[in-house]
Image (cartoon, rainbow, N blue to C red):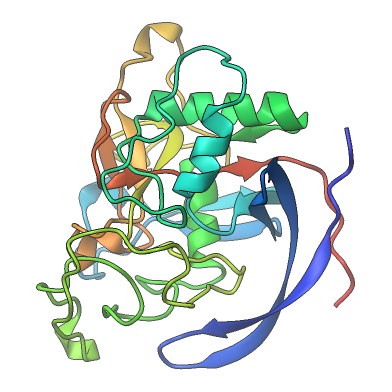
Length: 290
């Protein structure tokens, strides 16, 4: 197995209230036919998972806030695109068949949607078999840690959100006191990276566009949650059809549902045109010097 080549990529990172330059370490997985999957290095660290009761849109399922320590990993720079999905769907089957073209809103660079949790697990299994690296869905803790990228605000770019920054249902306002305002409701997905708004880790589209499946089983609160960043799974295999987690919001979601801390559950066989995925990889990497 070839070792992924880590490189530096100069990148503009945009925030509502401040802008700064950042270099992201990444590698590109070659899926053939000119299709690549960019994987961004997420440094290990600690953060406070969940939301405070004072945050607008807070729900009991986001409590209690609790410290998590996450080991380093790689995460997809964007949600999985339709071109990437099609390439992997044509690889040898591991456990189940995959529809190579499940999406309603067509476009090679649009996020894949209409995929179930089971579909996304199969996608990761085929990708792992093809590359010899461990691809999987993120744990819920990894997802939130990667989304926040060191921030503690409701969104990685600040206290509020608008439709110049993300694709969601702009008919609703979030945090009016922070100059939230109504915006555009596009009623469909947008090509990944359209807004050119990355967080401090170099990830795009973490708020809105499509919901992203996580590995964990659903729990009604964080009481008893692990602190090591691993997926929180029920103890036995009888719970395979138990609710799973989705994160990030979608083109159809209200802004409060696109917050870093917002959690949504659904059955693992569920999939409609608001639901996609983003993959992580546990490949070993060494941070480059600053």
